[in-house]
Image (cartoon, rainbow, N blue to C red; front, side, top):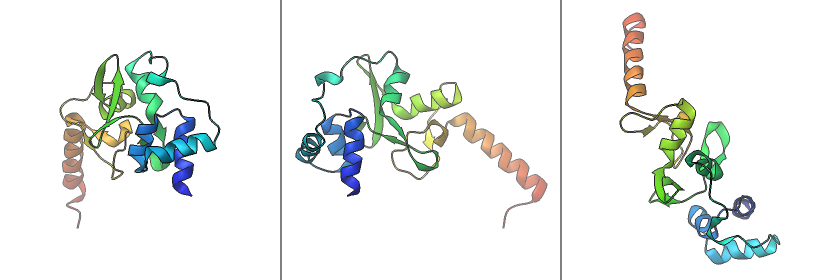
Length: 148
């Protein structure tokens, strides 16, 4: 059963039961039963030791998936992945973008892939990237003509 394997993977990554239940759309009882069946040690309440940095907090909940996507296992605000560090919440895409591009995003971030909730920095574009893409499209059209 695919869901059971996903629960086991997240439990072994020490993701809180409530986050697993929310992410996989199962009950907390189902997650707890899987925890007992796998004979895993009890979780440390409060998430254990705090992360050293915002980036470390992001990495703790970012799981590589197929095609360069990143599945988020941490907290969410609606559908937006959130990184919690030092009592503050930061959208995970902003942290992922900074890690991937080496700079903070300028303007609004927009996801460039179709995977809902993807938290891969490479799959987001800020204002500067969108403007560069428009310039490149314009230059391409000037050289080769409009695509048909």
